[in-house]
Image (tube, rainbow, N blue to C red):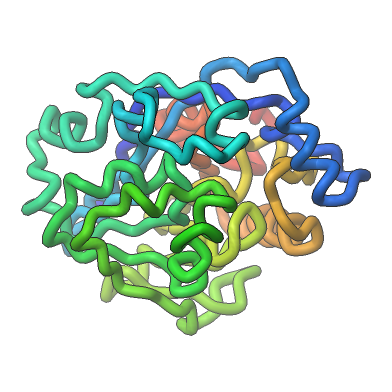
Length: 283
């Protein structure tokens, strides 16, 4: 039996124009709007997802660090990190303590850590996973390094010195609306799919069970309603790519009952517990 746990690692507030960009504007205007926006969203959860499978434990993303609110954690020169984020993570909210509270040793008990992408709130918890098999897409790893990575919202200066993940290329068999996948278990019930747009090389994880499939979306969309309305976030570099990803997720959910679980959706945990699918009329 496969079980999924939503593991919350603190909260984050972002600018409304970051959460949902004005898609009529060019990229530079959409990104400028984030820095000019003086409003905040409600506190959004920072979810990681733990998959209990017969072949072992698989974790999607490592969450944020409690040190993210301390001076010097993020580049001082970046207006994005200095003006557009409001992060609240206590030491006990970090992924290491959260997993230990579940009886799991993060450095020993995981079969694999999969990173949807290397933005700070998905990768700043890496320090707990020395020795674990860590997987990220080759394209996202290359996009997240150095100055380029920091400009895109990653925090490469805080990657552990030992961080050398497996760089995956998704060349596996098609699954419904996705032309290629990357199997993560030998039975094929857990696999990664390419969901670029929010960041180059972004990928999501699908978990198929006899009852429903679970689509662990990372930041492919910030919440279910935005996906339904085909609204892209303000950071996404290419609207065509981002909308295509949203359409592929929606098409996947039409082909099989699917529970959508983004990283920052306040309703994700309820949908997980109640198995509310994306096409459920009551959703």
